[in-house]
Image (cartoon, rainbow, N blue to C red; front, side, top):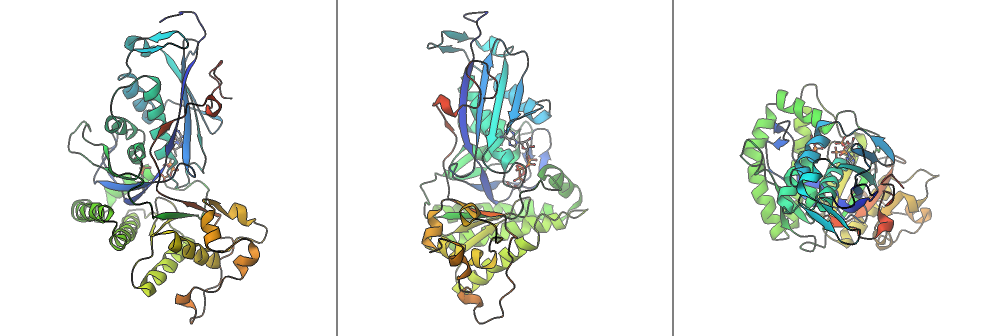
Length: 421
Ligand SMILES: Nc1ncnc2c1ncn2[C@@H]1O[C@H](COP(=O)(O)OP(=O)(O)OP(=O)(O)O)[C@@H](O)[C@H]1O
Ligand SMILES: C[C@@](O)(CCOP(=O)(O)OP(=O)(O)O)CC(=O)O
């Protein structure tokens, strides 16, 4: 190592998106390696609105691996962090940084410690896939720092060992996690089906129903399902393989009706296997059910699906609209049924791509109050409004995969000390 006793710090910063599955992963065939019992397909969400930023640093002055998540130091001793660190280190290659005059050989990487600081710009462990963006970003940034030469597929197999759904966050657009057959998981990788430009009409609105930490983690929930549900076997063997083929076809052809029908059916079946688990798992709540019913009524009256809904391991709804016009109509319906509490500012109630709010013709609370009942319910007795049941809405769209951030201002670690800024 050049400059043996020097106090250099070498850093890399990356930004990685989160993703939402439209054909769900639920159930493992190998807990340690995180190998799934079925393939899954996801849409990567625009990192402009939901993303993880991670800075990794290496220095001869660091005496142990350390990590800070959202400003608080956390332990890296857990198996998932250890597995990702080990797999990335074993693939590190010789590196020469001419600017700082640093040379690190493959052998030296084994002994050097790293500091990691990460920040999620959305709630952590609240069913918004923070673990997916988080582990993908950890693996991607470490791979850049350590001059790992392997492709995204190989990196996805490492991120998978941090959290299954993380492997899909290594790509933008539409992504498939191929479950693979090998015992060692070498063929259990993510592949990109289409990039984010392929179907750029789609608009995504997330209703954050609750941002508190959930009761049953995905990991323990799916373990219980595999142990106790008979429905999950039927799902994994008979239902999902056919849906994967149909979903790939729907994406390829921009067939929104097929895409929406498959997405909603798969979300509903995932929650059905949660109910079929013993003890039963309830991820959705009354608000989630009301959102489903609002979308179903609209889709039925329109004669063809306008919006797809999907729910992960929590009550938050992810709603995918076929285009901007439908997204504006969706937002009008959501604000009609779920207006904010009187003390909430509309500006903080609808975040992300606010242009959808403008398209909906809603500028302030007066406009929200003046929204008419949606046509599909106008002749019926309207259900009482559910004021305050939604914490906030995020408007977003399909987005790109991980990127390196070269501007040092965006780094989360101090370049001279390697400690959080
Ligand atoms: N930025 C990050 N970097 C590294 N690890 C992270 C990061 N963010 C979250 N994690 C890890 O993921 C865990 C949260 O995962 P969990 O599955 O409980 O929630 P979630 O991913 O937000 O929700 P879900 O998977 O149900 O959509 C955290 O406790 C932490 O260990
Ligand atoms: C419902 C899901 O979001 C489950 C995600 O589970 P995780 O990937 O969080 O689970 P682990 O692999 O145990 O970390 C569906 C999906 O994203 O496919």
